[in-house]
Every structure is written in structure tokens, then in C-alpha cells.
Image 1 (cartoon, rainbow, N blue to C red):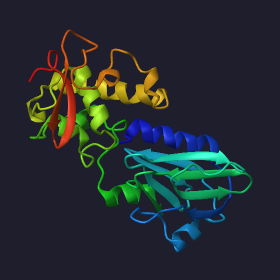
Image 2: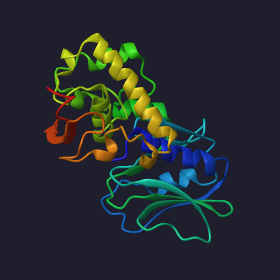
Image 3: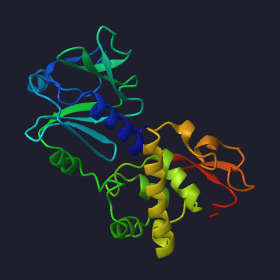
Length: 261
């Protein structure tokens, strides 16, 4: 599932290719049952307006203007925001299409229909309405330690809890724990101040590093877990092996040597 870095890559595409262009039409794509998309009135609010700025909070992507309205996009499992130019056709599985004046288009591609698009008045109000916690790249170290370090559940579950910390999911929680040498089933409140400080720094390094590649995993260091994130693989950091387990209801991958419980 796309997480903070993947959402940021999509936000940057909108910022680089879709700002300051008047919207002429906002239409639904094909096969749009069982997916949340703007209705006729909401889509009509976009016509004649421009996106002048973008924003991201956790896994949410926003595009709009100070006076509104905004679109709020959650990518779900397979969603992407893809700018393209006419006469090219929209990509397959396009569920929502914005047509700007001229040739520019913006497609929301979502094959599994687990993402969504909303038309809203304010990003801050929508974030508060949903109840998401602070963005993982905006939270302070002190607040991170207070939120994560007081959790009685597993550290992997705490990192993935969007109401505590917005933006981290299954993939990058595994990477953060791998690089800090913490077992995913460790109780978060058992972590020392030093471990929490190291985890905060690692979280920032991991998320920033992925963002800098545009979420192109092939550019990430070979010492990271992601390239060997499968059961039985050799650990890229030590002589251990990668083990798969179930933690907080999700598949977790960790090293059986340098991440011992």
C-alpha cells in the first residue's frame, strides 16, 4: 500500500505539472461502483478553478487553493495520480479525470478501487475530521517519544497507527525497525529513551531517503531491508535470515539475528 513517500511522489507530480491551470471538466471514469468519488455537485465546484498549491499529510494528498475547493486523495492499495497530455488516452483503470484548459489532464488510476477522492473546503479540517495524528515528517522528537513510547501494544502496530502518527504503513515500519535493530513485537512502552531517539532519527532518514528517490526503490541502498524483504532471504546487514510473521494483523519481516525479541 502506498505510504508517505509514495504519496509525496504523487503530490510532487501534481505540483510540477498541474498547478495554475484552469479546470474545464472533472469527470468520472469507467467502472466506478464501490469506490468513493465526487458527485456531480462536488465535481462542478472544481470547474473554472485552479490548483495553486499542494499539500500532503501522512498518506493524504491535497491540491487546491487558499480559497478552496481542494481535492483530497487517498491512494488505497494501487492508486496513482498521473498527469498526461491530450491526445494521449487516459491510463487504464482511470476512475477520476480532471481536464485542464489546453492539453493537460490529471487521471486518478485505481485498479483495485480501494482509494478515494473527495472535494473538500480545507485540508486542516479534513485531517481533523478523519482524526489523523501528526505527519511522520513533521512531528517533533519529543512528541514522537510521547506518542509512541507510551503505547502498550507492539512497536510495529504503534508506528502504523494513523491516529498516532500519519504516514507509516507496513513496508516502512519494517524498514525502520530493521535499521534500528528492534523486533516488531517489542512492546513500544518498553523502549528506552535512547532507542526512541534512534528510532525517530531513523524514521526521518528512511522516509526522507525514499522521498528523495521519488519512491523509486531501485535507488535505495542495498543494505536496506526492502530489496530482501521476503522469508528466508539473507539479511543484508548481518549473517541472519529474514523471517516472516504476523504482527498487529499485518505481515512483518525482520532479521532473526540483529532484531531478536
